Length: 173
Image 1 (cartoon, rainbow, N blue to C red):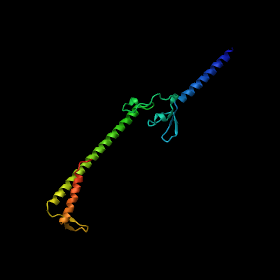
Image 2: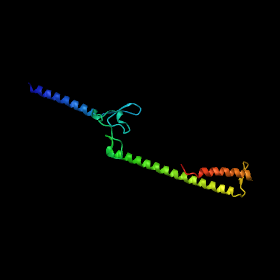
Image 3: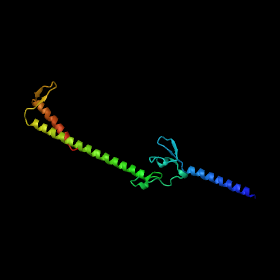
Image 4: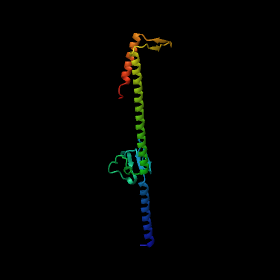
C-alpha cells in the first residue's frame, strides 16, 4: 500500500473520531425538562431546583438518575447536581430567616391581641361594677343630650356589659 493512502486513511479515521467526540461532547451538556406549564425547555444549564426529577427529560451525557433524588435538607452537600452549594446554603439561610421572622410576627400579633383582650375585659368589668353599684349613670342619647338611666335601662346595660365581660374575659383560643 502507498504511504500517502495510509496516512490519508489515518487522517480520515482521526477526523471521524474527532467529529464524533465533538458531537458527543456538545450533546453531553444538553438538559431538557418540562416546565410547570408543560413546555419542553432545552438548555446547557441544569433546570431550576423546583423542577421534579420526573420532568427532566434529558441530562448531560443522556444519563438518567438511578435512584430518586434525596430529600431536601439543611446540608448543602445534599443539593441536586448542578446547583452551587454556596447558593443553596444562602437560599436555605434566607428561608430559615423568613420562617423565623414569620414566627416572631405571629408571636407579636398574639401578644398584641392578648393585651387588647385583657384591656377590654378590664374595661367591661369596671363598667359592670359601676352599673351594679347603684349610683346614677348617664349616657348620651342620639340627639347628643345627656340622659340618666332608669332601672330598665340600667338592667339592659348590666346585661349587655355582662355579655361583653364574659366574651372578653375568656382565655384566648
